[in-house]
Length: 153
Image (tube, rainbow, N blue to C red; front, side, top):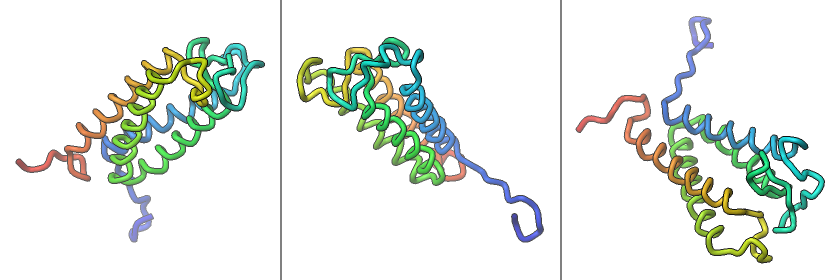
């Protein structure tokens, strides 16, 4: 409440809204990864490693560790979206992390013990799209000032 007794309006920039939306999606994906049926071969899910044959939506290889990472990434996005600087850092930093994961997935063989997350081809290409999308959102929406207006040229 403000000093007049009215609810203070909570304004969020487009950047903050985008970070919150991305965080919410990661949180949802982390939850869905633990739901049998939405995750196929659920009974084969391992904590980590490439032996897990569980697949979110029957496509994306997941493990308990992979789902926990999605949950934590989602919580981080929602928390960081509360400030403009946090939202920008989440989108740019998170995007960079996903681009590194894409390269990692390309370099590490599916049956390698280094594939501890685990990832498959579908995960790899999703990581590329997520990384590029998050960085693009961070850069494009980050060009606006903290109040949503474009900065003076």
